Length: 402
Image (cartoon, rainbow, N blue to C red; front, side, top):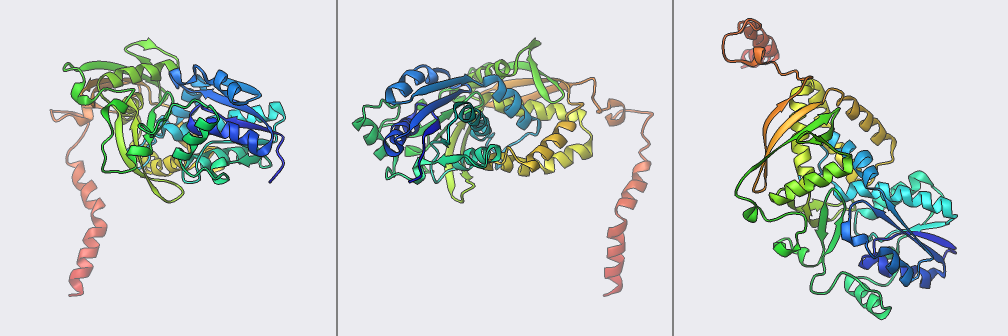
């Protein structure tokens, strides 16, 4: 086994990383520094420092990265309308490169020779973390306990934790795992592994069931500046506060739940249940804003890249040359995406009611079905005949060969 002196562990205080902290100390006889990123877990970080120190960490970092997460990771993705396989708004995927980047900064500051994470050998997070680590420092030692130890299930982890007196939030009665940040909560594993089983209603935290949402719809307005949301109902908010407010609004109306069987990068399919109320509202509003402010060809070209862009995020390629090029192109497409979108929130639905912008290239003078003086309908005949020229020629050729 490779000699390791000091490890920085990405630590959440949950089942996996709590066991990993103790396992690293026992296995490598090394010093372990625990690092937790506050990206909107709420109450989950209340006792993290005390728990990490009690489990054996020599030092604990708890860094508030909420503003950075939303401003530099969530908003760039939403400027691209990123979505994976039509449903997943990439809540976990966007958080991993931020966590890995800060983890590597701590490793450098502390003189650590290794970093560790709690991702399993079956999942996407191992790739996201490790591609990020290696993009920042290709010489760093990486420890991935799930690929090394003999603890082959979460049931075994719970038994290990019990033997070592480590308190854990997961129980055999509720064995699914959760990942929470300002963008979403994800649930997977345990009772959710059978895709035929519906999730328990009491599992959800951010949203009420649409069936139990208010009977009265609520209207809101979101203002955008160059593709980024900046205000709700005329109130300007910092990025993290804005997303948090949208989460409350969306959650109250049962918006943003998704039950997905997705294709993991490693090759297998996985069932996940997600709550993304604020993100669902934001994506709907952003697309409505783009509809009146973006040139048709620019919009269509950008849309043709959404699948590739989203796959790069999902698969862990945030810190890559191709991602940099794509982001720069997408951001340049957002220069005129400014204005206000009016929405109605009602029982799981987010409905666009209106949009307006000083940069609007929608022209009622041209689009109207009433009398106008700017468009000659006779011009359409030449346009259609020219567009159909290749079809006409092909038809004539086919007819001559019969």
